[in-house]
Length: 148
Image (tube, rainbow, N blue to C red):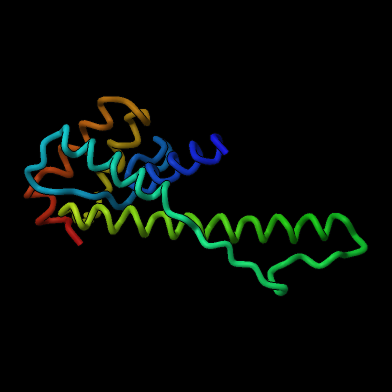
């Protein structure tokens, strides 16, 4: 369960704009004039809100894998269903993160190609990366020009 929570937290941070260096996100969230400490606290608050979403377990006979004579086929069906459930859970968790950020006054903006290229040079989780994203996210000029 702990590893699932850590995996989910990592996925939410990816969706928040802290993706791996090899694949910088196209979108991020910003709020003009926000302090660095508040920016980081808000990100943590909304990430935890996403983690705490109670995801409904949707199951029906049509989703349940039917027993097949070929055990490989059965395992593939189970795996496909698990992936569908995981994807749905991530969508529901991301929707909560998005709502939380909007409620705190944040808005999405699109990173330029140059910004994404620079972000790719900054290792995930580093202070440099956090500060770079913060400088973009807190800039009124960036939000005016690139806001959605």
